[in-house]
View 1 (tube, rainbow, N blue to C red):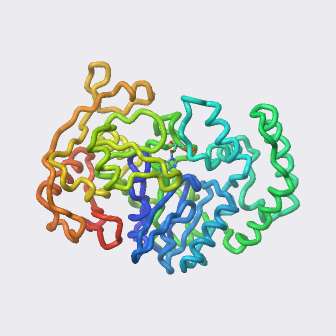
View 2: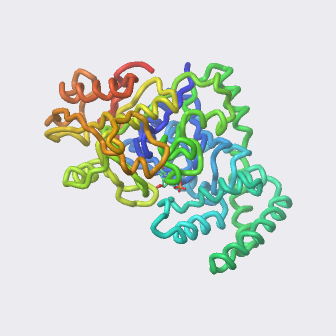
View 3: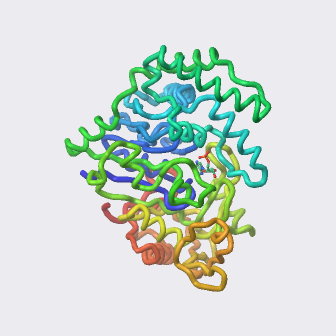
Length: 426
Ligand code: IMP
């Protein structure tokens, strides 16, 4: 059985939650390897909708283990609350494992995330304000606290105290807001620590043992290629590495252990947060797509920006993650459109280009060049097989395959598990 990485090709929200849930049926372990509760995965099962932020989308499968890898940043209080919400909804979380090496998101990270966004004013990044960036900053500055520290209250108290002293200075003197109460923060951490203790493990060892036993592992990327801190539209990015290479660092597995990488491609493009977006559309087609695709952030509720599918980004995502196959999601949203546009390349300062530029100002000057394809009228949300799809929908998918240089393995035509068409094995 292969190990498979599932990664978003654009700016996130490509439907990774649904597809990981679908793949988790066969998976022994589903692993998240980066990010935190900035992610929001919506899964629909038996008429119930679940919104997950930290917990991998495999959790609805009682026989699948779910791992929060070392590359994640975790707010222990919020994680416990998400586990309790799932429990209340009748979903067991016994199969959850949390890396002892993952870094903690602490109350000062959340405060500083919001305050630094406000300070940036019109140049804000549009973060989720969950403290993700500041937590990764502390990781790089070597003053972060980790999950393993929750198991050692004395050391936790001492290091937390040093950090709060420094952060309070920043909060009070630079941002002119009240500081944090060290005792209250410690108490909430210790309470969460008691609840998380049974789930904490050396997850790299666990994953590698499973790989050695030939088990099937799905690595679930959160956010996506263009939000990657190295390969994304910097500075309008998150603070981690969602691209497939992030798995090695964030789950503690060698590159030789990754068999396949699947890129998730929404049938159109969306973006939440600020920054350039060449194929963005603003007309009534955008409103239709936004309404039909329920394009409102799971984490923040913000309306998402939407646009046509962008082939330049698709090829870029294939390159930086080495995509073996694609999964097209939300194809049903485009039903009823007379025609569908797809960007094949850009024009930048009068020159044709196939390359995705490094600088956001260059990206802002890129004009998309479109090919227009005929749409289809039929409602495709009940299609079960490739043959059931209208010829124009099949032609659209073939066009995407050609453009990306990678075959399509799965097509999703609705939020339900059964609304998933297996085109070919990956
Ligand atoms: P942060 O990850 O909260 O620091 O936000 C940085 C950028 O990533 C912002 O533009 C966010 O809107 C975006 N972002 C973070 N997580 C997600 C996600 O799960 N889906 C889509 N965008 C995200």
